[in-house]
Amino acid sequence: MRSLLFVLALFAIALFPGPGLLAQLPEQDPQDPVAQECDYPVYRGKELDRQTKILEKPEPAFTAKERQEHAGQKIKLIALFCGSGEVVQIKVKSGISDSLDVKAIEAAKKIRFVPAEKGGNKVSRALILEYYVQNY
Image 1 (cartoon, rainbow, N blue to C red):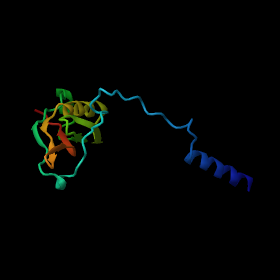
Image 2: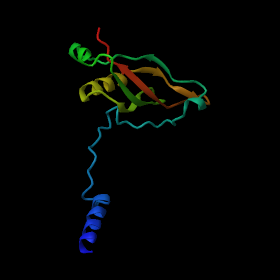
Image 3: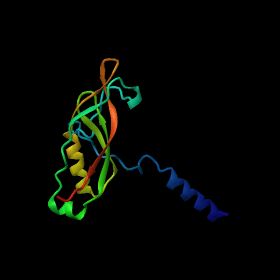
Image 4: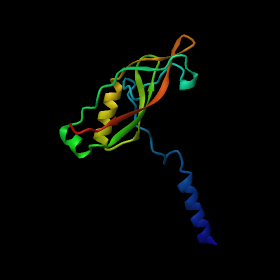
């Protein structure tokens, strides 16, 4: 009986760690576009009067070696196209490697676009971005 209580106590500690045992999130740089907040309301595509229009989508700066090693693979990101005209809150949905994922995020930050509109106001919209590794 005592060993059963001990196992249950360990299980409870593992499931519900105290505040001192929780990992702390790293500090986020408020100037970093990935971490930036967006003060414009977020809408889904069907709710919009005018969709987000991408004007320029730069390619990631993959090296020739990375292109050769990962040809045909893709990186999928989800990003918030803020009404301010900035791409923020970029997260990797499915990646290849840390270095290639970072290069895709850097490219996503440079996307130029016309924000979506709702009721004549600029609004935000979350979009999925795909970057394919091509061996030229």
